[in-house]
Image 1: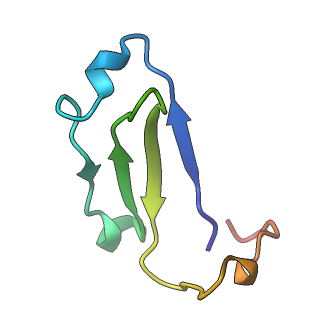
Image 2: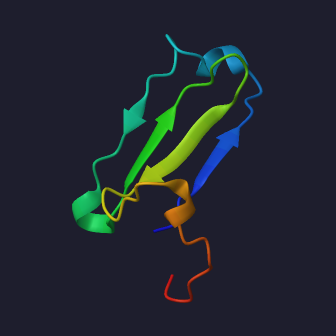
Length: 72
């Protein structure tokens, strides 16, 4: 399962720092098969937005198949 994530730089970074923007998760697994989530910007890193797929884990990063899949 591929991991899709993005970091976004904000026009007003102070609005997206811990204490202002909470960590969030949208529990939509039943409808979409994934759980979107976000993490506030820490030390100017940008807001992280990604999806969590709660299955098909690996024991080591070398086991991840990064080949594109047509079925997406």
